[in-house]
Image 1 (cartoon, rainbow, N blue to C red):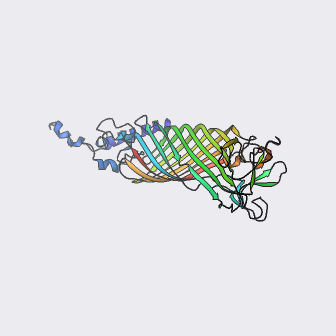
Image 2 (cartoon, rainbow, N blue to C red):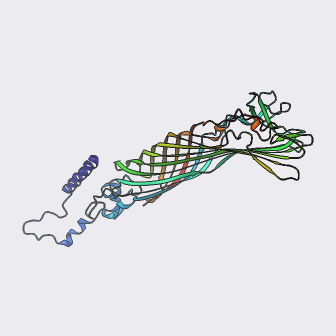
Image 3 (spheres, rainbow, N blue to C red):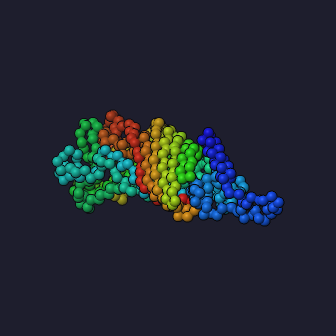
Length: 454
């Protein structure tokens, strides 16, 4: 407040000095001369032309580059203020604004530390064997490039642009990572889902296809979706003819939804056998196994930030920094089921797949304190007094999230697997077990936008 008072006081002194230094409108009258008529004083009181206003300086807030600072700050009360009358209600421009961005972003790769699909000629895909090869998993999943959009709008409560309100949000597309492998009708090549036998601690495999045993296909799909919104109060704390600094304080909301689906379907070949519900089956039965691991992370918190901008003749640059502090609500949902359809018969569905069994199926929640900083920069060009275009970069970091690949446990008790011939024979150990696994997340990328102010 002291800065604004001193600035206003200085402007008042400058205005007074200008008035004192201004040449008189009429020559000194000699004694006895008649006083000037009102008509003669009219030309001297005419307001300056818009070009003079532009020459005396630009306002700190685009899009009124022809407005003098005193016009913007409310000192232009009468047409007598030099350079203001020509602008009319120019102080009111920039009172409301809206911008729209196209986003081209990347996110942190999805963790998947466990292998989910293998193949091998003589090993049948068992991990650790010489000819076993991992087809999918055991490394991070790259979701590649996301497209999205961001909208923001705001307004100033006062004509001096001291206090304002701004809100908006963004969303990026639901981006998939896919793996799809299908065997021939004879069962080649071998497709397996590697697991660890919790009873022995040894590597084993659930066969999806193998020559002379079964023909099948394996689908693994992962999705990632990220979006958010915010609402901030603005306080302008610094202003010059070409720069401004605003403080932001408000509320931030973010959501990260992700999931991994593992689906397989197998048809027994003549001579092949399998289990279902603890019984051995043969013939042309069809088996379908499905596991789903889904996570949802929701951030709600307070936000504090600052935005600095510089405006030149036609080009401008702005810097943004924000930090959110609040709660990260994390949800993990695990589901699984197995279906068996005999030739010409009806389908039977039982709960439990292969990695999602009675020991870990369920919904789990956790709340953690999280920090969400954001950085951004925009560089742009003023197209006309109302519209400008820009290109920029944004980075968002989230300190605590749950991601689906981290929630998968390969240690499996065969007695809990519906397709095992030992299903139901033992209840311990309860494997796979569930333990909340958490990590960090980030998203970054470039944006292309248009802004309109009036």
